[in-house]
Image (cartoon, rainbow, N blue to C red; front, side, top):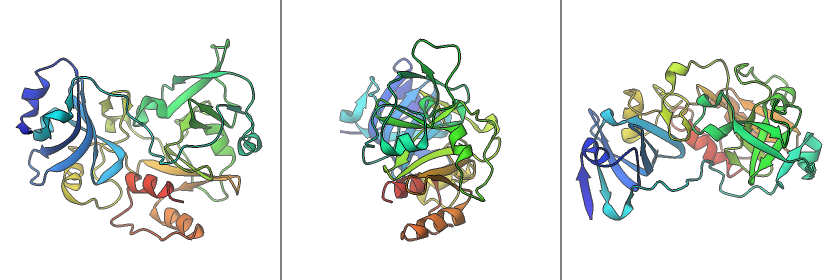
Length: 299
């Protein structure tokens, strides 16, 4: 049964955490409603995936939401464990630590056991596990940094220092705010093209809004390009927080070339697509984090 409910009434009914699998939300001062999925309410903030932007985490403060519609069967006070990456195919790199690019390509990890901890700079990212430090078992004082990659629980993490050292010629400068001992979780892509994100320059944390398990990367005035419908209106009014390619730059490990390409802007991204015999995108309409991640899954 469809219900239309004022969010403050719904969220005041229970303590701290609630989940709706599918809903439609209405922003104040925005005429067009937004269809969303995996809506979570934690600590007076909601996070969700918008239908127009399925490959990105969006957030909004409750005070900006007028009401919502949902089927009661989609409602739960228990939040399920949700996938935090957007790759549509599983990576085939075995779990373990890889000391070099060559060992990673060969899929031959060392036998050393590593465990992750959230990096203190993870506030730039959608989820706290998007940026971690790894520690060798029994050695908890210093995080590792001279490893190319670590695969943990079937998720691939690429080392920041290795990204800096293996950039393609002429690629742009990345933020020095992320230390060399950080490992970026691969958010999308395939075994041949592994996609991560990193600030191009130092990003002010005043843009950030906390969400469960991590933080969004920017209450952007735009998501880098025009986004149709209520999502665009919500972004332009500062009501929705979502990662922007103007703040977070895409980086892809090209396994065959053994180097990283950095997408400084839409032109760079299109140059990469054309080199892969893939159609370029419309920079005015389609250049946003969700589309970039989705395209990387198909390369």
